[in-house]
Length: 113
Picture 1 (cartoon, rainbow, N blue to C red):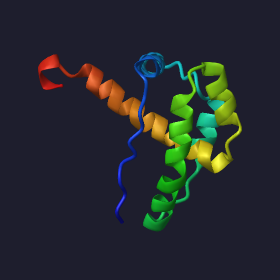
Picture 2: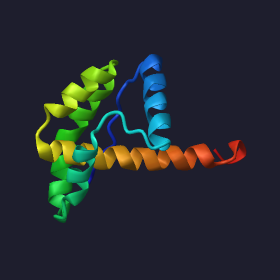
Picture 3: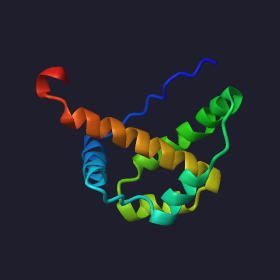
């Protein structure tokens, strides 16, 4: 499997918005997703084959690119609400993966970052 990382141009203001979002999330306030959406995403117990993972990568990257370009929190929530449940589930898992990296990076001393 050869997945190439997506490269998405993100304006500085959007980076600040995402940083604020992840900061709030690191304190336990998940602004993008309701508790039910998070719960539903983590209830999913199906294993994902490598072929499915590659397929997910192909269709989730444009969704991420579109989501990142939205600069209003309410519009982001509307966008997420309009996604198919499987896409929302994957987005929730990715979000928590990004959040884990954000929290770990935030805890490292500056010299190690």
